[in-house]
Length: 101
Image (tube, rainbow, N blue to C red; front, top):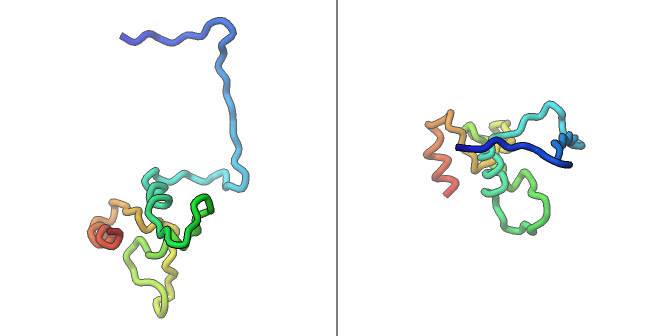
């Protein structure tokens, strides 16, 4: 059986608030797998470790499977990492996994 924790002597609880500079206060964090895809599935050719990763390295295709560029008028960069596959579109999952391999 677990024993409850108690503070004694000079020990005390501390609360700390942090503010992010340059970030929208209403911004919501993405799913952890989104970040794994962003920072773990990008083209490393010509990239110098320790330098920021540009969006063009991790976002070159549309996640919705639609054609992009040229006459389509759609940008290929949609803000979703190319290695991130949302399970709400199972019909695209096999195609996207084959492209990522």
